[in-house]
Image (cartoon, rainbow, N blue to C red; front, side, top):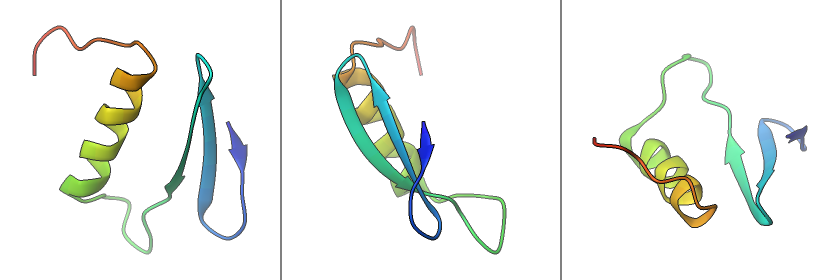
Length: 51
């Protein structure tokens, strides 16, 4: 992980790269961001047990 410009966070896992935005001003995020993180993890080879 590394901090990008402004509220961006760069993440690399198992050769898969993604950029996410930190939620602000609230600390909660939206469903679309959660979906993007799940997709990133799946693409990186991390399989969820059960949702």
